[in-house]
Figure 1 (cartoon, protein in one colour):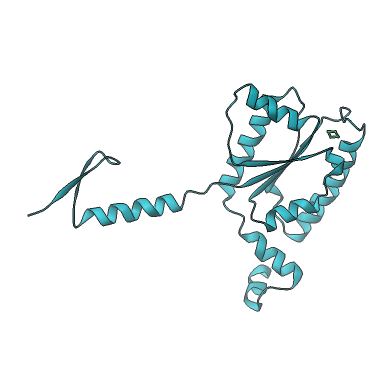
Figure 2 (tube, rainbow, N blue to C red):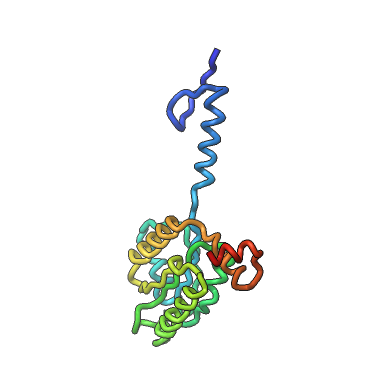
Length: 187
Ligand code: FES
């Protein structure tokens, strides 16, 4: 006799010996395919960090995939930290500070913007995926904008998938890749 069991996930009965193991295998695989992007945000203390605080106090909901690291100013952010973030498993990075002419130290964000333009060309040249890096200005009064920046970045990274490619590119640049990986990189 065929035995059945009720499954609340599908709101129906499953045949005990036949469909049940299959059902849970498929469900387990779907769960393990659920990619949650890991994003690191380098923000300045005076504008974006305060803006992010406002997002919370205004109870605006946004993706919880972002970890924030606070700097005194975007001019203080060493862009090599972006590569370190990828090397440590991040899938995306946000750099955000005060709007132009609003920097607490007057020109820090202009320095950051100039360095970013140069650094982005270099990253492009090296084969690093710059679509995973979001550079933005968010003021202390723009809680809603911070939520939008985070949500859009997370959605974008979710579409791009995990940045597993980074280690292959970094290995190629440092000469640590195997011959096979080097050939693949040239393709
Ligand atoms: Fe915010 Fe300089 S203090 S960018």
